[in-house]
Image 1 (cartoon, rainbow, N blue to C red):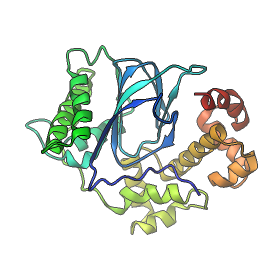
Image 2: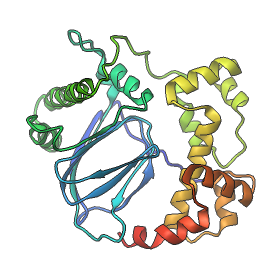
Image 3: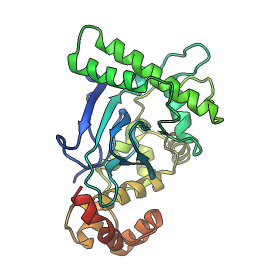
Length: 296
C-alpha cells in the first residue's frame, strides 16, 4: 500500500533547500505530505500549487508557503509544456519556538494562520516588493549546498526573516496571531495522521484512533479538529480522495481497483465521496485531467 507521506530526517536534516528545474528534475510533483514546512518561490514560468484543497497560481516572483502536514502537489497549467524554475526550502517548524519581543512563537503563529480560513499562504510579487525575498531564499540554497561552518544558524536567520515578513503581510490584511506558546510536538495525536495515511485502505474508526492516542472519543475529536482544522472522519475521507485523484492521474487502474486501494467500501461510495470534494465524478476527472498531467 503506497502512502502520501514523504519521510524526512528532521533530527539530522532540519533544513533542505534547492533550485528546482523541470529540465533536470522529475515533474510534476505528485500529491504528498511531510512534517516539514515548505516554501516555494517562483523564478521562471507559471506553476500551479495545490495545498489542502486550495489552489495557487505562481508566476515569477510569487511565493507559496506550505504548512507542515498539508497535502500538496505542484504541476503546470493545463496544456502547458513550459519550462519551470523555482526555489524550494523545507524546514522543521519546531525549531522556531522562541518568542521574539512582541512577536509570538513562529510555530504558534503558523498554526493559528492555518486554522483561520481567511488567511492565505500565497504571497504575490507585489506583496513581497521591498523585501529581499530572493536574497534570503537563494541564501538558504547557497548555505545548504556549501554547508560551511555555522550554515544552520545562517539558514535559521534567513528563515526567521521570511516568516516574520509573512506575519507582517498578514497583519496588514487584518490577521495578527495571538501571543501564545505552542504545545510541544511529538504527542500521539500529532503523529496519528501517519497511521491514517498508512492504513487508509483498511476500515478506520475514530473510536479506535482515539484509543491509540489514549484519549476518549470526545476529547480526541475536539483535539483533532483543533489541530487539523477538520473532523477525523473528514480527514480520512480527504486522504482517500487524494489517493484516488493520484491514481486516476498517474495509473491505468480501473475504478474497482482504485476504490479498494484507496479504502472505500465500493465504487459507489468512492464516486459519492469524490464528487463531494471535487464536484465531479472520478471518471470525468480522469478524462479531463490525465492527458495534460501525464504530458507535463
